[in-house]
Image (tube, rainbow, N blue to C red; front, top):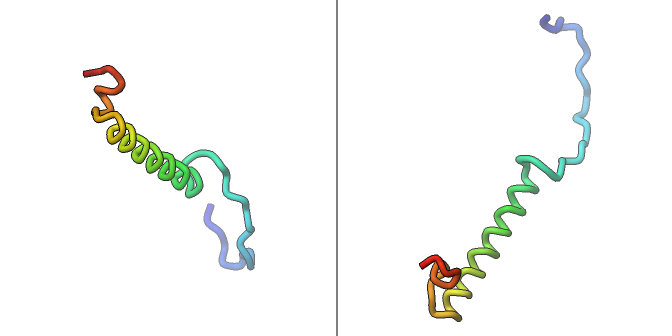
Length: 60
């Protein structure tokens, strides 16, 4: 059914708290920060061990 033109509309948008799970801005920001920390940790392991990450883990 379509709304009739005389149906009143709310005057303000409710201020709802964004959930802390699923695809939202908080989760994407947290994921990006974890990826940056992991990348820097990988570079430090390679620098201090003198081996690549796969060699250091024993895969090569």
